[in-house]
Image (cartoon, rainbow, N blue to C red; front, side, top):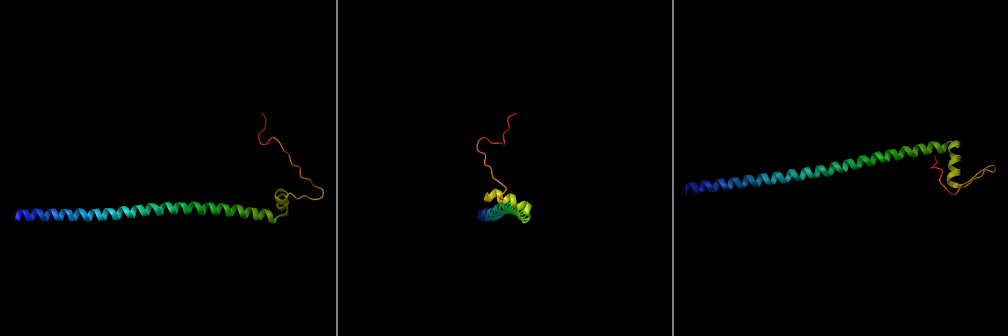
Amino acid sequence: MIRLIQLAGRVVLTLVALGVLAVVGLQVARVVKRNVVLAHEFHSMTREVANLQRQRANEERTIRRLRDPAGTIPEIHDRLHLTRSDEAIIYVKGASFATAAP
């Protein structure tokens, strides 16, 4: 009878230990999963910040260029198709000039 009680006690203790290990394992897995998700979000935000910084630098270069009349006039020509009285815009249709024949 004493051996049966000892065996039952060992089985219960083993089951409790396995239960504790399972709960701890699940908690660790949940924390690891959350860390992976946060790391992905962090890298995504880092890429977005880098893209926004590049975009801002491009926009600042455009602003500096457009503040100078030498940069503004070609922009007016390109976007608004406006010319001075002594200028003309010539539109060329047909083959692309980017591919030159050898």
